[in-house]
Amino acid sequence: MIPIEETIVALATPAGVGAIAVIRVSGSETFTIVNKLFRGKNLEKQLSHTIHFGTIRDGEMIVDEVLVSVFKAPASYTREDTIEISCHGSDYIIQKILKLIIQEGARLATPGEFTQRAFLNGQLDLAQAEAVADLIASDSAASHQTAINQIRGGFSKQIAQLREQLINFASLIELELDFGEEDVEFADRDDLRQLIYRIQTVLVPLIESFEMGNVIKNGVPTVIIGKPNAGKSTLLNRLLNEEKAIVSDIAGTTRDVIEDELIIDGIRFRLIDTAGLRQATDTIEAIGVERTKQQMGKASLILYLFDASEIQVSVIDEQLSEFNSPYLLVGNKVDKLSNENKAEFEKVYPEIIWISASNDLNINQLKNILVNKVKTKEIKTGDTVVTNLRHFQHLKQTNEALENVLEGLGQSITGDFLAQDIRFALHHLGEITGTITTDDLLKNIFSKFCIGK
Image 1 (cartoon, one colour):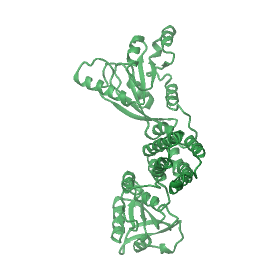
Image 2: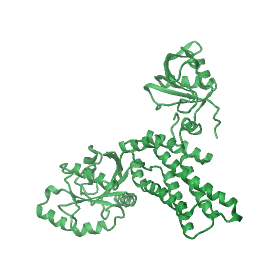
Image 3: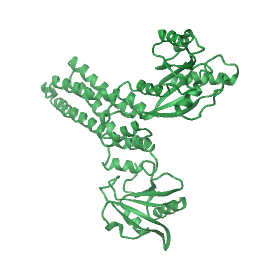
Image 4: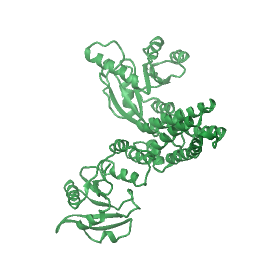
């Protein structure tokens, strides 16, 4: 583990030329180091959460005029003495200031080290620390709100409460083991069973929320499938409101996968336009069709688009039989159909969504249906949603351990076996918030952060 007594420094804003850059310094020698470079007030004597104007100097040479924000331990992000230097965004200035601070005794921070120190110093638990990375990466209203809720500790509080309830009973079971020869029971088995049921009423919805949470965090892989000239590329362009894909009357224009993102009502869709499904006429098109089939296997949602003026119901039947993912059946070029033709399709497929991609007809309706298809369970603002795969896995393992406890109670097994399963449950709950950690786990988590955070 990195020695926490070292003072660290890093650029906290994105690299590149900009109006302002922020350099963050944290550790026990923060004020001593920065005071050697800063001409202005003595920073060590200033109140926490104050800002001071001055210059950073290399000897007598002025490097830049800066604003220095002071945060004194423990009232800082890392719970250590921290300074943030706001300088001009010249790469030369940034590198010069970083070099001067390192020369005075700090070292360059590793990715995520500021947040790692916040965790090690008790400012954040591990679930909250991971949510910091999610907040930085959030690119939709839903992912932003979910990350904010986790940073504010709602999820962690629920896990802590579950663990505390279980610890109380575990201590009674463990106490029984100390009096094994006397055949006494300190933990009422019926009370233990009811406790597990209560815990599962919280645990199971958290586990089930991961499906939606994964959608919020990573987006919905949505593949547009159909025969050549069905209008797939035109539909992609209409959904994105830009000319992303080449549109042509020539069949087989799209030879490769084209992908872009669309956010609707806070949900991110990863839209994938594919080569038309048909018997390929050349090697390149054959590769495109094969990639289309690969994308179909990975898709969370399929938009099956067909040219309603040309296709037969039997062809649709054949195509839909190959889908293993949820799909929407979208009839394009509806402006070319008579009401009688539409009625014939709707007898077999009443769920058809009619559009005209070239005329922008019913595209907004399709967007609304896309969102409703994903939101199978309505999640209210403020609800705890699990978005982290690591959390999901530990929650599942916790529930499996509790199911083993219930099974053991049903078979009247001895307290030592019950205690073992309860320990497993406690262990997995503790892994979520960092009550139980390993150096390898922390290294894996924080290495994924950006430097400066």
